[in-house]
Image 1: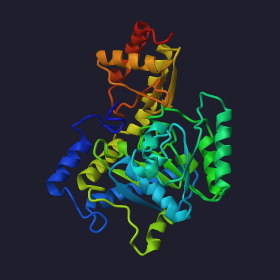
Image 2 (image 1 turned 45 degrees about the vertical axis):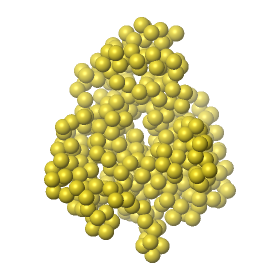
Image 3 (image 1 turned 120 degrees about the vertical axis):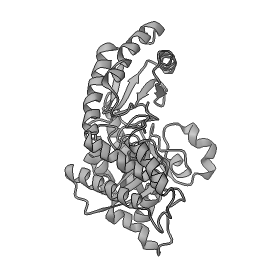
Image 4 (image 1 turned 90 degrees about the vertical axis):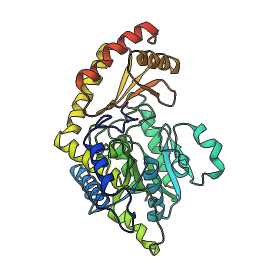
Amino acid sequence: MAGFGALVLGHGPHAASLAAAAQAERLTLALGDVYASEAKVALSEEIVAVYLAELRAAGHAPSGARVLLGTSGADAVTAALKTALLATGRPRVVAFEGAYHGLSHGPLAACGFSPAFRQPFAAHLGVPVVFAPYPDATGEASVADDALAIVRRELAEGDVGAVLVEPILGRGGCVVPPAGFLRALSAATREGGALLVADEVWTGWGRAGAMLASADAGPDLVCLGKALGAGLAVSACVGRDDVMAAWGEHGGATLHTGTHFASPPACAAALACLTEMRDRDLVARGRALGERFRAALVEACPELTVTGQGMLVGVRLPDRGAALRVSRSLLERGFITLTGGTDGRALTLSPALDIDEPVLMALVPALRDVMREVGASS
C-alpha cells in the first residue's frame, strides 16, 4: 500500500527522508508567502517545469504556470476550487460519482465517493455541486456519453466554474475511464467557459505511469499530493499562468496559505524525491512493472477483473464480503491491502515505484491461493 500511495520510494530511510532530516537541521519553518524558504522556491519552480513539460509534450501550449503549495491533497483541491471561482466568477462545480477529493469543507462538497461523507455536514457545505457518473473502460460505453451529456447540460446554465475529475479513480476502486473521455471532457469544459481541474493527488508524480496522468486532456489546474513528498506532507495546485493570475486581482488581500504550508523539510523531501525518480527512471520502471504485475494477476486469477495504470492497481472481487475475506487472509500471510470502490469490492494496490519485483510478484500466488481457500470467486 506504501502509505496510501504516498511512499513512492518505500518506507525509508531513502533520499527524500534523509533530505528532510538534513533540512530540519538547517531550517524547519520559514515565513511562507512573506519570506519563502529556498526549498519552497526550488520546489515551486520544479513543479511548474513538470506541468509545462507534460502538457507541451501532449500537444498543449500553456505560456506559463504558477503554483500554490499546501500540506494535504485536500489543501490542493481547496486551492483549485478557490482559483476556479476567482478566475471565472462562477460558483458551481461539476464532479463525479465515486471520486474522493478529501474531507475538508470545500473538497467534501465535491466528494462523490460516498454521500454519507457529505450529508452530516450538508448545512456547512456551500459549494453547489452536481455529480455525473464516472465511466469505466470495462463497463458500459453509454456511461461516458451520459456523463458528457450531464456535463454539457450543466455548463449550458452558465454558472459552472470548474469541472473536477480524477484521471483514474483512486479510492474509488482504480477505475480507468474509456480512451478519449478526458479529452472530450476537456473540450466540453472549455466550450462551456469553465476550467478543467484534474485531481492527481492519487495518480500524479509517477503513480499511474506518468508524471501527470491527465496531461493529454490539458487541464487548466492540477492538484498534487501523496507521492509529491514521498512520505512528507506537501501538496500543490499548479495551473496556467493566466488562470492563477486571478489571485493577484484583489489587491493582494485574497490568500490561500497556512503556517505549515510548504514547510522546508517537506519541500526538501519533494525535491530529493523528484531527483531520485529522474536518476533511477522510476516512472518508466513503475509503468513497465505495473503492466507485468497486472498481467500476472490476470493469468493467476482469470475470474477477476484487474484494472489500473502504472503502480495503481485494482482487483475487483465479486462483492464487499469477498473483498474483506480476501484482504484479511492476505494480511495473515503478510500482505497489507485495502478494500476500495464505492461498493467496497475492490482491492486497491499502490506499491512503491522502486519495490523489488520478487516482493511485489509474491502477492500473485498468495492471492490465487487465498481465492481458492475463501471461495471468493464463487
